Length: 358
Image 1 (cartoon, rainbow, N blue to C red):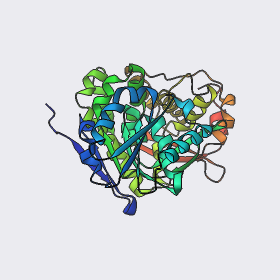
Image 2: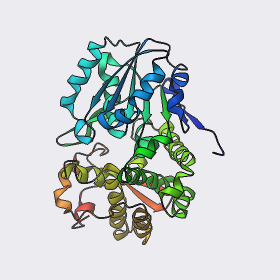
Image 3: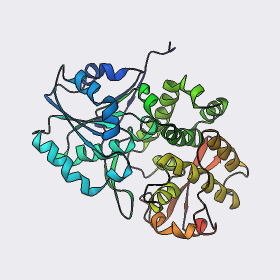
Image 4: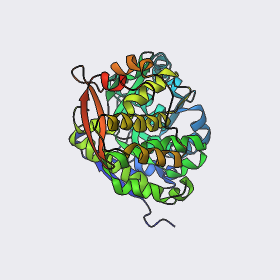
């Protein structure tokens, strides 16, 4: 039995505020929660072929008590987060005669959250959105904060918007059907939160022998990660100040993902490499304490995450130069003063170029 039956919090963003509920089994009560923010008629569920197979019928049957429900699916994986997949989704919404007063639900991991969120932001200039993340990475990170996007051949998330959901429903039971690799993938982002803002969370993650032990406290872990992101986003919605700290490891990660066409490393795996390798670069330039990268490396290995890609930095420079976090032609690198305390360091490519491989 859980000590807490559920966790909840609110993002206080003035007119963009929204509630987040975390509870095992919450999918079975989705209609009750959604009625809090939506009294309309139609709901379109956007999902991928794998997630819908597990949870689509359950969610549809629950929502059919109150609403007319339709769904559309895309193939699973980052390859579906493409610009040219959007017309088929817009057509499905038109065929369903979805209006601006209706609702879109994103049911899936980070790819679906980004893709469905972008569709909701752009169809008819904005349709209500509810995020129901089913992967660990999406539950702790990408489903909250309001960033939605699609990829371009030149880089990840280069076309997007800030578009907040009306609600986020998180059911940790969905993690039970995830392959182990995608649990590890999510742990990359969980570890990131401990690194940038919460040493006690980092130490807690280190205290477990494996994810099976951690899962006993998964509701609390998700809640703490979301709490960190909420505090940052409430101060900086649009990624020009504190919110940049959430991108620790991501400058290298996005470039590594793109280099392999999103096929070799998952996002969380690439983030783990980025955190370790960028911290090594920082140590070599007296920008982070020596030994910090080894501490991050050890916890990443514990959760079966890679820590080195072997790629030449020269192969990554073009993607890094297009990184959307760059400001005034400067790289915005997130570095650590110590575990749990981070800062943004403005640099140019020479800092990364000095290292042969990452």
